[in-house]
Amino acid sequence: MQTLSQFFSQIPVLYKTAALLLLSNCFMTFAWYAHLKNLGNSPLWVAIISSWLIAFFEYCIMVPANRIGFSGLSLGQLKILQEVISLSIFVPFAFLYMKQPLKLDYLWASLCMLGAAYFMFRDKL
Image (tube, rainbow, N blue to C red; front, side):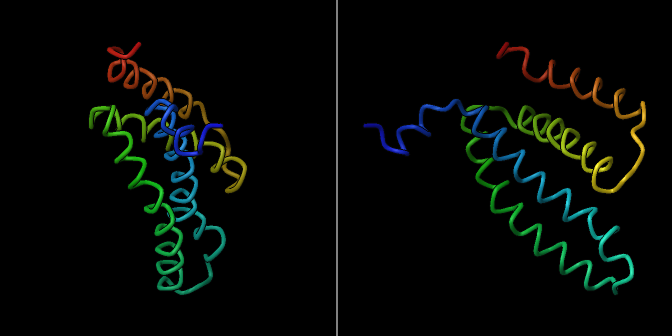
């Protein structure tokens, strides 16, 4: 029977990195923006400390994601992957949680990010 360590070692670097970045971006999006909705009437220091506490967990996931990712991806590929994932988390967050209207600009920004991802990853396609 395969151990958990052996199982994870078989997962491609790109998939492990993307999964960790997805999770870390959920935390970071809340750290950066949720206080606008939830703590709008609180003192600024409360919003800052709350955001830092959330961001701590984001960093606990982001740092391993980058270390794992850098073992098989270039720094530029890591950055573009992070930005694509960030936008893919931000748009649903803005629409569903913050109740912001969907805009056609999100589509255009997404297409630009896909173009950037293509150029950064075309050697792996």
